[in-house]
Amino acid sequence: MSREFAESLIATIPDYPTPGVVFKDLTPVFSETAALEWVLSECARHFGESGITRIAGIEARGFILGAALAGHMNVGFVPIRKAGKLPRATHSVDYALEYGTDTLEIHQDALHRNDVVLLVDDVLATGGTATAAASLIERCDARVAGLAVLLDLTFLGGHDRFAQAYPHTEVFTVFA
Ligand code: AMP
Image: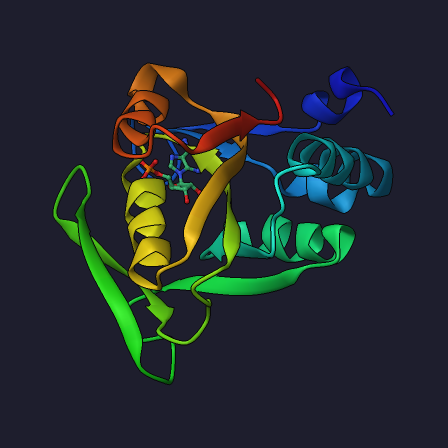
């Protein structure tokens, strides 16, 4: 499996879900056995020496990569979800979208003080989602060791925004 083949599976959909947005659909990468295996190996290789104890995936597409990677790296998986989806006591953070705000939550007991967490999502765009998710990990007194994404839409500035908020957290883009 080559990077080029895995990358060629990414589907680009103009004007979805709203006019002007160029949507990157990673599901064809997940559905191809060898491509998924290659993606998981790249992430595991990059963070193999980081002492990761748990992976936190961001709803919803971060669940797919995050849960698969947790199995691959033999660590536990923790979901970071939209408001009202988690049944027990949560930490909650509001963050700005282009129009309006959104909320992310994590179970208060999902992480432990000594956890070293790898945050996972499919696409880094403006960085608002990843930055908010990282703040939830810190609210649990755990450490955000890294952020792994498949794609970074660099022209939207998310990488810089995240790096400014979390300068000691490594950002790894699989299809850089
Ligand atoms: P942001 O908070 O702007 O960095 O947006 C990141 C979140 O929105 C991720 O969970 C992505 O799944 C999703 N997202 C944003 N822009 C796109 C895009 N162009 N294609 C696919 N997903 C996107």
